[in-house]
Length: 308
Image 1 (cartoon, rainbow, N blue to C red):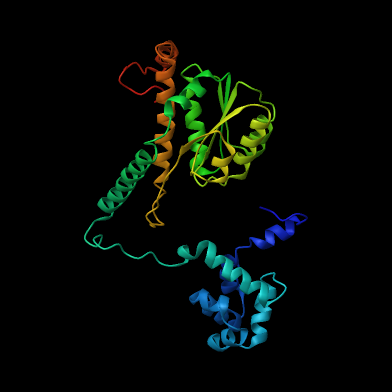
Image 2: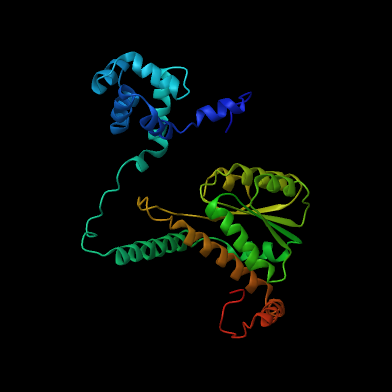
């Protein structure tokens, strides 16, 4: 969250990528500066917390060289440079280390190792999701979706925006009036024109997505209902009336895409199927029309999924 009165330049300075700037100086700096940068990059923990004298001694350079490096990277002085070093470690320290080999992987070929990791992660994500939904009143949620005069689905970011668009894809074919918004400004604006009888559905893995939280709060201010798929107890969960709890646990493999996406898709399908069953046989006509519309593309096999 931005600090009140803070300028855009100050916000940018707070989130500067010092690692990228150090690597740039490694290519363009003078010999002493390059030696200093190499020393810093080799042990960021030390550079972030050691004294200037200790950093200079380890790199074999003078203390003014450290000051010149800080200013060459756009910082007022060494204090700010070290602050951003500590910030870089806190935010992305795991990505600055070479991933360790997992015991048991040594004898596996790349294809077998990758397939096992991705498939195993998907299974684990689905099992966690299944356990989290054991006590959820899914029937009540499905009734709210089925009865809504209009449904707006919100999600910001990679996984959540994918889930929002996919839920729209699942619900419109049931004959429901549904629109997904992944743009933060559109989320807030569209929520401001809602009224009683409408429903917003929000997705956020962390429950911290500011635009989705804002949109849910705005919509409820005007009488709309709110259902969210997110972590229980998160800010987004606290802003809504109904929560489909999202539970996930990453395995620490930084090279593998997050398995939480599979659980998100399961949540989408769970809501869609529960809604279809709540509506009942009436949805079959909508589904038939969708299937018929695909005949022009020679997709005539009834066993193929609708929409390819």
